[in-house]
Image (cartoon, rainbow, N blue to C red):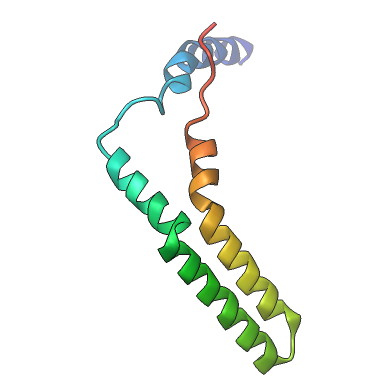
Length: 97
């Protein structure tokens, strides 16, 4: 059992360099990603975020609760910052040792 764990550990460490650089290639979809980022952080994204917040305000008034308003604010902020967060998570690479 102990030997199996050691062998599995060696194979895991051997496979790590491929996983470290896994997100650095594939530029085929970069124009699409740039377009989506421009939409969400440009005028269209601000209009949609403002609409989400406005709907949250109206729902908050209708339900007499601040929770709907809070969800509207969170949805608008999340829409605006989603491309930045996705870029930070997906493009994080480690240097090869």
